[in-house]
Image 1 (cartoon, rainbow, N blue to C red):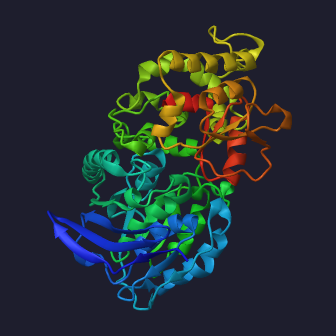
Image 2 (tube, rainbow, N blue to C red):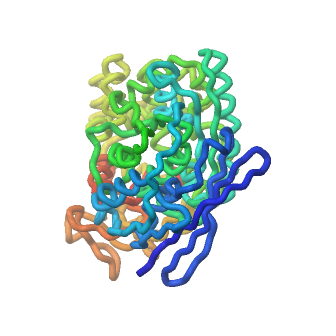
Length: 516
């Protein structure tokens, strides 16, 4: 039987930082020994606890469930009895079979002694729309914020390392400035807590299956300081489902981890994305600080530091729809320091076409489309032109033109000597599935055939390439690192369908070309 063993935590202090470490042994094919740690700044060491391994246990849980490793905890430590019950009786049995998670055992001594009751409230300061919405809504009220936090556990690069840590350090400086600005403007007394960790470096796992667990580890570390931790919700409850992408069942995870008078509260599920954008656009603190770009996460995977101080504006999907959301709420002009508004003007017709063409299957663009239509920015005539019955500033948008546009971008990469296969491998994508085996799918296969595990298409007769398996979307799809969607219509519906079945990254061909 393979297992991962956690020893009792130890504490060291250096230069105002407190490091809590746990020696770890993995007994599998090869025995491995390592030390996992959290390094905390901004609180007194007496507000931390070391008689149990709760924060480490929840952080390693998805890794162990994916590998099928039981977890053993040293008799010198233990696990809070409430948490041990929630994990072994509720959470783990509910997750077995999802995203290749296995039923595992936790062998640990239950600790019945209650921890000191915290009184504070905290929220993460990632600088995104959901983060600012959560912070700005909880500066006062029943449980007003006393702390902002920043955790380097996965969000600064999916596989940790020096690039992710350097990016994290730069973000700490920005977070400190945001605390100062809020305290000066609103009379609050916010302090910043930062927590660095090497768990993702030592036990790497994709964010899609582990994000909430890795984030929750540092939250549990602060249980003696806090009574509530506000987690910014990035999905509505209508999208809740257990399986696939972990953030879709965030409410269930955080319910199971809210123990001993400490509550992890998902905040913002009542508001649409557009509502949140409109709300935060009234607060000047967001004008110079809003950060939504996906580029840092992707580049941080394999040690490539993302140097830009701004969002990419038009390359990644998140920037594109945020720009249009700000336009829809008349707020874009305030964000000239974080978005390239000149580039927005140059790409305006393309961005507008995105909204129109994806309005039926994109939850983000659906609301934006309605708002722009009501403002008269999108008209029936424009819709007709974009959908192919005319032209919009000479930009064709019918089916063939969309394919030709992607082919042009693909050819440009090849002519510039860029290897798609090499670039994907550099970002941690070693196995790929292609969805849609039409013209684009076949061309993409020829470029990536060495890393294509299988093809996906509704038509079983469209298999392309020798010794390649073709599967339908309804079949049980084997695990891969990345699925690339090559269709030009219905992309979001396909993405949602695949996300319910798989826990990997799912990108359109256009998104892949933007990233490399």
